[in-house]
Image 1 (tube, helix red, strand yellow):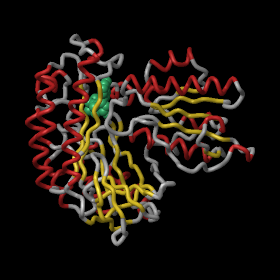
Image 2 (cartoon, helix red, strand yellow):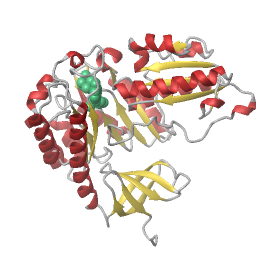
Image 3 (cartoon, helix red, strand yellow):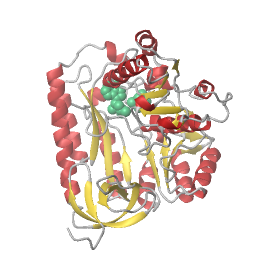
Length: 445
Ligand code: 5AD
Ligand code: SF4
């Protein structure tokens, strides 16, 4: 069973192959694992391989080159990548796949050396040197061209803009500071220039990206200044991920006040217990987190709130767990990513005493999940019967359903032929814990 309430599956980056294996052209397949940062990096990788004359294909067996852009945050992420590498070794023996590159967070970790001994991998890259892939695929060295300053795309209508990389926190359990390095913030003018270019080119939705975007600082400017400036240039804006210690009330209020900002906040809490928050080095207490949420709820009454929670961190007691359940109830999250603690070599928590037995972790996981889903379901039910303006993020699939988003940040499945990047009115017909289901107004059901 997945340890998250939401997607853990590799994210398909493009639904349509942009070339086919039988045209004799070079072909490449990119698989992305993990977070939005990786999705964004994969977009850059995609542009490189396209520039190098590769046609993108979706299946390993059609690909000359396979690029696995990986995640290292939890052990099951590594296990999944191992499964893919095993399959690729087999296809190689059959003469199908010719070359394999491993990029992303596993590439930046020591574990990549072990993987190299076991599997046939031609190139291993970390997170800071993906531009080296350019040479590997036969492009001239492109260090300047392929920097994180370049936009990522998601079908052109939605773009991810990286505003900072790395992280200056040292959360006990987290490998990110090791594999992504210390925080580096991109200058405001550079971000705004990119946003303006994207918008001029037809992008309708900008997501500002970084491990702790709200920690962004540059030449006396703070994250809220940047967000406000972007919200003036772009028709629709969101940002992720935030850290409670950096989240300013001013930013929470701006979310409510500014029409172009999606009223959706992702604010990882990790635990509801002050004792655990201290062990994790999170730098805040549960009460402070609760207060932030009050400000957000006040500022954006209809907004949606999501979080990350880890269950079974070493030393977590029943009392700690109860406090997490209480916090989940108080904050009434609209969704949550719930993770079972996974020891990462090189992190402090990997060598802490007080391992929580698997069966206990599983029970706590389900208890938190149930609590989150109950709240989310109740909140979503309140939307039924209403009419909302939604933005189409992904056009309709074979079943005729498109995926949209309300201004309050709810995901909506809607039967429509409306194109991605457009707005439409939708009538909410029903709701589950994760999504709303809608039809175009006037549709008979
Ligand atoms: N074990 C479990 N969950 C983790 N996360 C990060 N590292 C670990 C780990 N070692 C979770 C945190 C973080 C999210 C991206 O992944 O909740 O916010
Ligand atoms: Fe990891 Fe903590 Fe940094 Fe988030 S804030 S990336 S959990 S170290």
